[in-house]
Amino acid sequence: MLPEYPEPVRRAFARNVLRNSLLLRRGENLLVETWSGTMPWAESLVLEARLVGARPVLFVEDEATYWKGVEEAPASNLGQIGAHEWAALKASDAHVYLWGPYDTAREEALPASIRHRIMANDHEWFRLVGRSGIRSIRWDLGRSNEVWAERYGVDLAKWRSELIEGATVDPGPMRREGRGLAERLRTGKSIRITHKNGTDLTLRLAGRRPRVDDGVIDAEDVRAGNVVSVLPSGVTVVTVDEQYAEGTFFGEGAGDVAFSSTFRSQIPLGGGRWSFRNGKLTEYSYDRGGAEFRRAFKAAGPGKDRPGMISVGLNPTTTSIPLLFDQERGVLSVSIGRNSEMGGHNRGSRFVAYSSIRKATLAVDGTPVLQDGEFVPARQ
Image 1 (cartoon, one colour):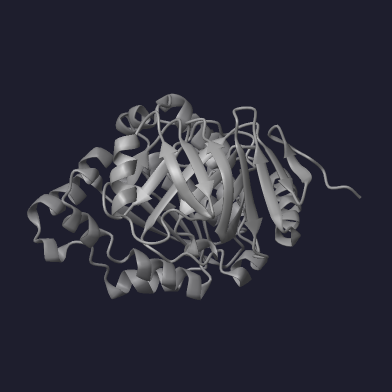
Image 2 (cartoon, one colour; image 1 turned 30 degrees about the horizontal axis):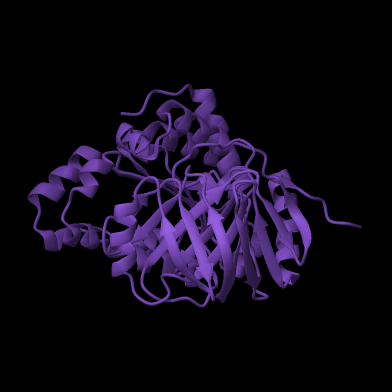
């Protein structure tokens, strides 16, 4: 279970989420969804919303009751969302989801058919939120547990501490650095990634607009359809030309992961080595997770071996959050596989793999924008 946290900590989190991330205003409708394990945090969000002058509504999923339902109810009754719940979401201006359930090991042990049924409405949820411009924040403290901490090789207490600290950081500096980097990636033609570990990878940009996830969902984000953010935030992402990649990339291990719809959705990896030639991944190896990666990679369809995205982290407070390692300031990440959700052209099988390194150098058209993991100011 989660430890108890002092009210001042919970209130500071709630204020930052509502005032700085969601830019919640007087008279707006706020929907807060929580699992029972994060109920105290939801209470702080409701209170802070009332102080802003917004109108909060709270939905609660009790974990014990949820698991009884999974065990006892017919499979056809799972994953059902009623019209009243859709109506509440549609009528909201802003939304906070304190993600669950806590027992992720039990969730992963469910048959794939049951997991898919439970998640059957995810696509409709994203479609509705995007179409209606509902500003939505997700926070994952309610998923942090001993099982995942061991799987991803992180200290559980530190992970939780960074989830809180990273969600209360001032987004201003992240916004300035992220937007400066995004402009250089938008106008550039080629990028080269080098590192003392032997990494030397050249990719091409495709003139696509990068996405800056700085922890704030403002009017510009809403117009662009970027209305969903996970806290802690802090990353600049751009999809690359899927037909060009030459060289090698050596991940340092922390945070490397693959997502596969065929096998277990999240595959933790470590010490990855990728070699690209003629725009495709031609060789790979891992110090950890290699067998699972190989199975998922072989089963994936066309596009699995193409470069997908690069990203640079912006958040100065995070160092070890599983699945958000790419948010750490100065961390450079590369992906292969599907990238259409971020504006790319690869709509192949639902397979994506990420590899990351600290202290890399990133040059755009021969000019460094990141030097040994530190941002290089643009020349005036």
